[in-house]
Length: 404
Ligand SMILES: *Cc1c(COP(=O)(O)O)cnc(C)c1O
Image (cartoon, rainbow, N blue to C red; front, side, top):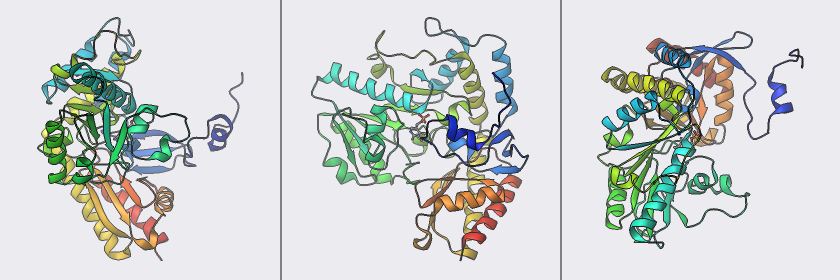
């Protein structure tokens, strides 16, 4: 086989399943919060690989951990345990409410484990009637068939035949809608402590505490999907820590590996014991390379400097976006928390978030969207302040081009 064929965007349409529509730009290297494409054009990265690259690109701590582990041992399977997995698990339990960890390779798999555990717990502790799972409209929990059905967008779960059953959806920030569904047959409530894909929606204090109370009243487990909000994204190690609400099960992925695929489901001893020997598993879960990088990411993020830095950098974004809006009047609201920020387009620009993303890319700044009306920012937690300023000034140029 010859290697002499053009490796470009057109090749994607030739050889890839058409479930994505990637940008025309193909990045080839990154350093910190800057990225370069095949033509050596440079971009400021405000997208962070969708809230994954919590320490930017090629952070020395992560590169060092990966290199070091890559020369020791790559893979063992769960027939044996390994030092990086044990170390990362210890750090996760020492720094959270949890006592036990299950490692997976992605967010969806972490949620799949959480949901299966909740169902098993309910079956063993309360009997086979207790299987209802309550989740939320516009919620997102991944793309396995169970998790996408729990997610609150039927468009993503329709069209694949019969769905996993006994899953219902309430309205986020509407406690009455949860009350109307919950009963002693409810096994678990799965919720994002800030809806990410669904539009950067923060829970009200009354709502999130009310959800916890309803779970307690009905002996249902509370599962926090912190796949997007966790590992410092909102300015705390996990979002629950700032909400005054502790879940029974928490899932974490995305930033946990800083760009290396890893996820985890964490819970208490009492619940964990229902995931008995042989009841669940994964070939790669707890892989030494993934856990070594995860440990380095966790250690680096879990410091007052980085976590307080998130709050300070978030202010730079909010102030900068408000200043842009004062000139061009394109946003109705800047929302979100920490470094998970959404700029909501006004009625006039409704449905055009993708146009802003494309225009921003052309000016040299990578952004994200959340639905058709929100431009989303999920940069590195350690993005230099100068890069924020430079990226916002490029973003302003894009806004200027689109604003009438
Ligand atoms: C990204 C995301 C997932 C899915 O994670 P994958 O790694 O893509 O499987 C699940 N839940 C939330 C809240 C997410 O943001």
